[in-house]
Amino acid sequence: MTTTLKTPDLPSPDFAAIKNRQQAAWASGDYARIGVTLQIVGEALAEAMDLPAGASALDVAAGNGNVSLALARRGAAVVSTDYVPALLERGQRRAEAEGLPLVFQVADAEALPFAAGSFDAVASTFGVMFAPDQDRAAAEMLRVCRPGGRLGLANWTPDSFIGEVFRTLGRHLPPPAGLKPPSRWGDRAWIEEPFGPAATSIAFTLKSFVFRYASPQDFLDEFRRFYGPIHKAFLALDAQGQQAFEHDLLSLMARFNDARDGTLRLPSEYAEIVITKA
Image (cartoon, rainbow, N blue to C red):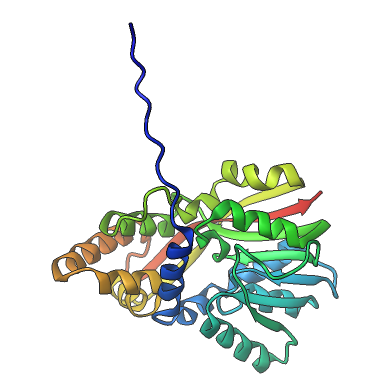
């Protein structure tokens, strides 16, 4: 007689508690200092989405507004949303400096306060991928996009430098059981799961963003001060843990850095995704 052992089901993550911790992490430091360096990604995504002037667009988990601004520069009527008010304020100041008439609104990516089919386009650059309930966030993006509309995403891939950063972070501060990694949004196979049944086409293009800093230590110092998840991780670790985390991050940078003059030139792969909703 053969006995089959059943693996016990893991409890579902407490998404509300995780979201509260994430919100505090992204509100710490000053992500806008990092975010502005990624502006080229928003510009490239706006070009790839190729919206007509006057199209209505929603930026989900917008941070300091990179793709919001890029779409507005191309004539879209943009609503820029995030659950961190301080980041929206930074985006608003950028829009005011350029005279761009964006609307800024606090909103949760997993419960968008808009009616179904409200927008011609929905976008997110390195934002919605961090929502803890990934399936719900994907469903919300689809819900508020009209039939025939476009969804645009820029997401770090699992094997990218930033994907490895979060894997390293998880070794030092393990995530809650059952929580899926953000880099899943950079995996075509997963993107096909929530979006494929609702799409007429999915364009999935691998690109690289290049981080450039005076040195690996300069990069580390900048991210430790301003990038919320790294900032909070160092605060949560004791002195020995901080030293070990710093060592691992510097070792990781050494693997990806292709500069040979003491500076940092570090490509990190991401997926640029444009989905046409059925």
